[in-house]
Length: 101
Image (cartoon, rainbow, N blue to C red; front, side, top):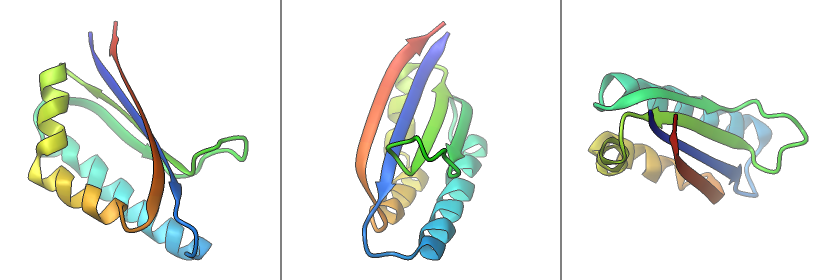
């Protein structure tokens, strides 16, 4: 039992493919490091190599022990830094949260 948190974005227009890849890989490393920093994260993966059939450029798939753990993650200072960085190169955020299990 837990709360699944899935988020997907598109890259902003105007950046090169190399810039997008560099930024996405930086975001991946920083987000995935939160597993060791923020309590209540069960799983957290950022997928930066999506299939051409996708309508989003990158996707976060994460699992939290509870809604309270997800809420704490969302306001955690380290997460807020990553959100600010992501806002510089991502747009069109789509999110779905649901109870799993």
